Image (cartoon, rainbow, N blue to C red; front, top):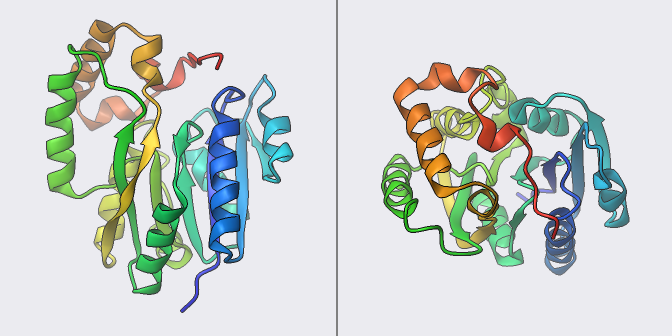
Length: 237
């Protein structure tokens, strides 16, 4: 079965990161040659995010959610493809990763993700925490939020991303998809931004991450305390 697909990019004030992401996605779509659409969900941006998105041929949907799960769901509601690929605005997805995703869908997978590479090495203070996190995440087999995909049918059957959560929504979606069928992590890796450790001190990231782990899922159900994701620090280039 051939799957036409929709690529959905949530974006809030992403004028610096978005051009490289959209160029890579547009080039991949052209290289693969299968019918696809590119959607940018502009979540109340105050910069040039929507103009940049349109300049790359993306369909722009304006929302005012300030919650990543709700923003991704808004993109899925207007998408026309039979499969959804969710890509963060600071993540580069090689065409071969999308080819592998489509091959997995054609082979019957209901959802999945990809291996992750960072655009630069994290600070030494963050490395031990990151290593432990990656080991646990790999053992669970969940997709990282920067690249996660699903068939339209499976996504709609499970109700999309769980909007009770302001973070960790990709984990709950991965778990729900796994319960419905084959869940696959493809290669090659996507390349995501290390901007968090370029815009925050390493000790702050370590402290905030530790607090979230100790507080558990209830801490992820409100925006307060999730400064790393919702405070909105951005790089200029």
